[in-house]
Image 1: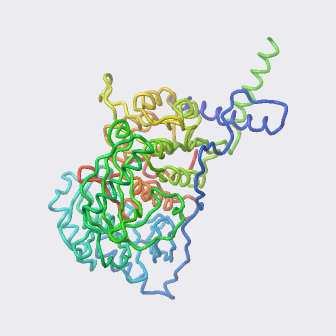
Image 2 (image 1 turned 135 degrees about the vertical axis):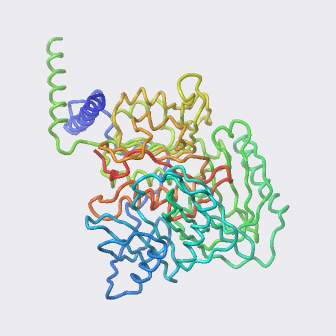
Image 3 (image 1 turned 90 degrees about the vertical axis):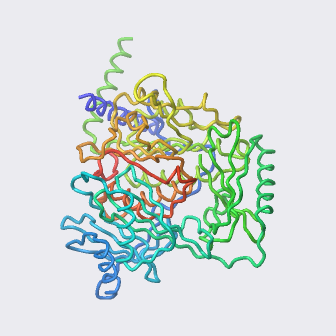
Length: 313
Length: 251
């Protein structure tokens, strides 16, 4: 009942807002208490974003049967459900800055049951099932079992991960996220990974694979101490502007992607290959620590420029 | 005086009638982002994520039918503005610093909160800029909400009291209510949250006739991977509560 009353109240407020807008439009009458009808109240310029950054082109089974065959093969290998219909699309995905062939299997009502995405080289980017286990598992799958299930699933799908996986329990839907971090000659590629979600009941919920293009490694590489000095100089500059102090952790050599974290002029730049970088974690101290938990700098291991970074607010 | 009273009654009747009869009532959303707390004068650099994420959220909430979309990027994101607007909202998006703070009273001794924008003349202070879930709860007056996204650290944790401030039960079951709350359980990189939100919204707003559900979008966005996390104690972990079969559309 409370909800119904409040919903009505919200409807009245909404209508009041509309009446207010009408009154304002009409001229002499004024709306005293209506909510602002302006569409934006910004204090700084916000970048414009295309409403839809996903461009889709239909793929027909007669034209490209291999797309559907590959999808079916991986879907079945991972134990994901097939549907009564499927639909193929070639997608230019602006938000992820990748292109792929996508096949969605749907039920008779048109609801998606599973989906696969492959890039132009035939590499699996994503396989995911959308159904939820009908009944929560009585005994959620244990970590070791999840690791085995994930490795077996990848093998069946023809994917060979390198290295040792890590596993994190997943609060949102139960189960485990099993992750293999990508490295190149022993150097971690930041964010690149194979991630397998093993559901509570031991079935595979998703396989995601992220692989970025890497630039050539620099012929001369900065030392860790040189990278630390560059980060120290950067934080001294930040301190002079803000008064905030920072502690600097030991730089780690990683492949990292140039980004616009600290430079708005790069927001619309096309994705550049990842560069060998010294990744430096910088922790704000004092008052700044109460709202900015961590800052990360990507220092180009070749020329020492800061190519991007990240923030934990 | 009598005339003024009659006029007030007329206005209320007109507004009530319009609310009941209008097939296309306004479904207001507010998107808020704290940019000044992460500008050069406070941290030495200008973090571009608050403005990027604000723009994305606005465009995508609009595609879901929320209109008008108010709120602010920057100094107008204040506690009084947020609490003053929230009752009329159906959708709420917040990007700023958030956490689950200790509370001396009430179970579970947590009063989740997030920081308003500090404005251009000072930097954020936890003691003066916090917008607590208890204050939001009072301002929402038991009113229902469709889509609430807390693009902050920690407010997707199971200890968070933020979902209840919007009357969203911390359940993940089919229900009649059209409601969905999204947050992150741990400390989260801006880049990871932005990647997730772009994938979530892109999938949800894809297809035709808003046939996709919030849980499908959540599953899709979780599945793509590529999420960096600060350390092993803070894995990237988005979380949700509400009705998984809701399509995210306003109203």
